[in-house]
Length: 116
Image (cartoon, rainbow, N blue to C red; front, side, top):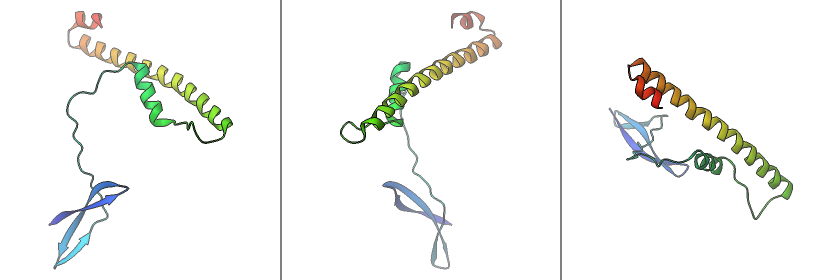
């Protein structure tokens, strides 16, 4: 039988399995993260808003510090990455639409498939 011992790792709450044998606690090497529950649907965003959100997480450029040459390179990289991500996001949306269309046709909903 084991129980979970709360602990912290990089500021995040984790749990470590602890087993008892003869009155001695043995802490396992495993790490369990608490479940995260999100309720509801995320907001519907345009492709541009999705790309901007992703780039905000991927590439940050400081306005106060740093070499101007490196800053300019980072800004150019962000622009190229935005164009790349926008193209792939459009392709993913088109692909998903085709998958749904094929599913509808396979199940006899031809009118709905043509409407998509």
